[in-house]
Image 1 (spheres, rainbow, N blue to C red):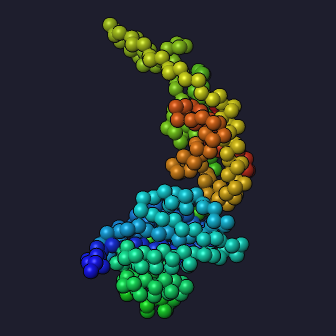
Image 2 (cartoon, one colour):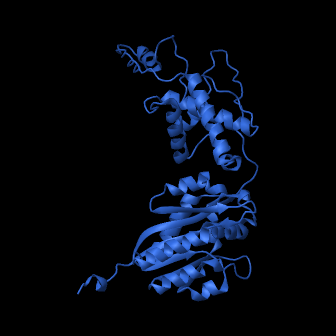
Image 3 (cartoon, rainbow, N blue to C red):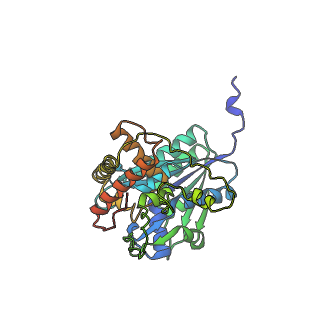
Length: 341
């Protein structure tokens, strides 16, 4: 007789988050907002807070967190792309129709919860949701012996969770406004990068760093005391008896030229606007900083167009970002000063 079926199951849990419910209920509670466009969410920090809270409340180890959301044509937004790259997080996307309704999310949640329960992958499930459509998923998981812990968002009045969903869950907890407040911020007037003010100087004007240079942490060098002399060498020359060290010669790597990279940056930006939609790309504004995940996607797409790696060429990557932002700013009618080369 096989004895594996009678071995004790290790305590393990998964977290299932209906992002549509979480965002709508939190936006109404904290900001009196009725649309996601009215606020921004620090999703990565919010997910870390949820997993930390579950660690305090639930016995066992976390298997993973499932994040259920929707997007038009299932094309992930900037925020959703960042979430998908987080460790121990699984992004599940349904379709968001023209009326703003999620389609397919409930079915995905039930399938994941039931599969994990059936294969004894978890002993407990944390469900952050409010819709009665989640009830079949709860009943299916409980049928396999999984305890379901229902979490909800503090309601503005009455209740924002279906009564039957509350009744069927094994435990119920409400996340209070103070817990959620640090991760939601009202969207005011969008700040737009302004052209740099002209410097009033008698000497030569140092180059103005471009948006991409600001992102990359690259600072334009100041003018030297003598042409061709490094600032460190000039300072050392003024010290009595000091030996002037020669600056190391720059590595001779022939990379892509500036115009080519600007064109590729604009090409990728235009491609993204067409494929991902203007509303999706608008989430990148005001710039010039791209989330690391999105910046990596920009680099990969550019390398596909170029047919070579851009890793060795920091300056080429800077030009790529310049071209990308110039196209995005034109798309949304934002005027910025051109960066000096």
